Length: 188
Ligand code: CA2
Image (cartoon, rainbow, N blue to C red; front, side, top):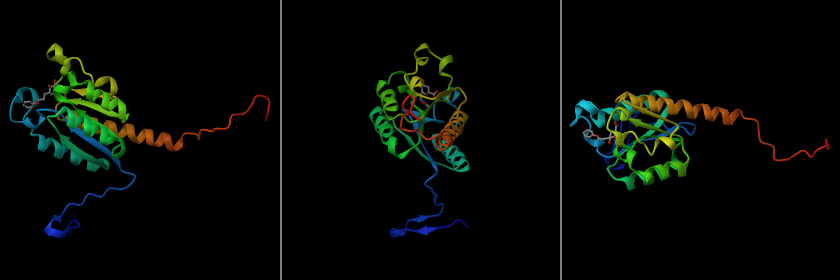
């Protein structure tokens, strides 16, 4: 039986999420129309619903010991706000900007401004589709792009970002301390 807490007003938490201070925190953002996953255009985007995809991401995050926050929006401004907010609350971002991939300088600027490692994901292979989908404004500010692998792409992105963040944490811990004192020539 998992631990269980009863909050005021009768709200019961049966599956508490433990967040340690060392846990990596990753925000996963789904762009416009991805709320329709599994309902239309199944030959391109598959049969999985967004809820099922999010559950698979949460399951992997738990295995990796990562705290994830998953959100979907049809609004460019809302996505920009969530990206900006991530600067202090998260270590990295996985994003499928959907249609905004090919149009949004605002999303690109937000990712560049916060400077968090970001992985771009697409369910379909955008490079095999119409010409207008070949250009991504997001790729240039991302550490990597995964396209064409369906829902698995999100899981690979999460794993890849986890490995990237873990390696850079380790590097920061072991890197030689920077000395601010400069040794003058001939004095020593
Ligand atoms: O392949 C991807 O993941 C895309 O980001 C999906 C976008 C598209 O504009 C990009 O070029 C590639 C479209 C998301 C729309 O998703 C739907 C899902 C089900 C039904 C209709 C739309």
